[in-house]
Length: 552
Image (cartoon, rainbow, N blue to C red; front, top):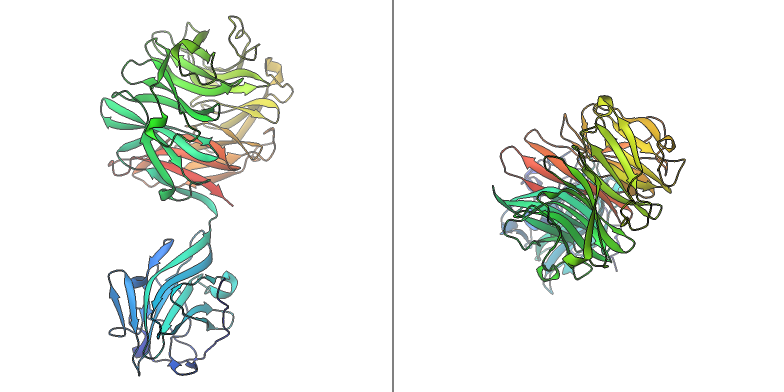
């Protein structure tokens, strides 16, 4: 049970010589008296103190003002308040504003059986402090920012040791209501985060990415959150999952039969491989067995997209070479963990094609969106069967955009939006565009597709990632090529078909001058958009895997 705030107010005027040992705080009011002693304390601070954003827990030693030594001393990271019969001991902690609304403050104090004191919180409605009796252990004080925050949005907590008492302030923990985009690195060891892909795994965010061990070797790193939204770095752990010392590249992450699975290009043989965890979470290295070879052609899997099709794994991918090809591989088994289970089909060949394939189930059948560089066009295919395993299943091409004016500069994002297929991409004019097939559920005819105008006309957009359906609405994440900032844009209509400006955008991450954001990917977890991206610094000080989640 939370302690009841006592209506103990005071009007005090205290000389600065008694109260300003750390920073100048303008005092107001006069002392109050408890039953047995006077408790002089500065009035609630006026004006803004110089401050830094606080962490979730601040040390007791981080007070901004106190009685001063010898009554208040610091030992390691705690504050020791020791009153005598004549001079009380007090200290004040400041909680400056952040993007997150402060809900509670919980001081952790140590008091002996004969010790007593008070905890005060600033009250700017009354111009005084509100007090509760201090107790041994942790006490939680609810914060009402309309009442307890100063005009500069600071909240203050005071601890007072009464006559002859000793109080040790270990720390003060905060509970906040996090709002907006919450962004931080989740894996920082080495040059990690390249080609990252994110997915919801067992109700939690999970990320596959590439870590460079040397100029010629790398490993695939699987990062997984132990909590629903992964709000703190300590929520995350990571393991290496590939069994080849040469590592892997171009990975994609999907849930197959309830378990996480990864398709990637082997770093040694440059062939397409696949591996699936034996558990729903994939938290342990032992959960990931030896990968199986899906396509043994050289440079198969240069770009890959993994999805579950009719309860079985399937992969759309590029085979790079003199004549790049688009291929589709499917498994006969539900887990795909035997090479003999896999079969592949060449979908398009004879040119520089198959870039950035995106595999999606559209109206029950597999479909692929991709970029044909040789013919400078965005193309779409949908299988005529539910598995895509027949020799003539992939024959109905739809060339959605053609010509240099519409050159695709980034991966295609193929979505199933409101019962219709749709594509997101950035064109050569650096605009974010949405193409929706809202007159058909299959998109097998070009007239069915509505080529929308630019949804975001900001200059030099770079798309570096996948689109996703978030809260039932199509959304995209992308990078501003001028500032290297990461942005998120979501439609206000389920089918994405609005006029210019109706895909509101918000900045996810503001980059500094010495770093870039690459390989952005996006998914929906617990109804919220989550992103991963690789942050690359010019001086290699933070080549890290970053995670972002939108809270509101």
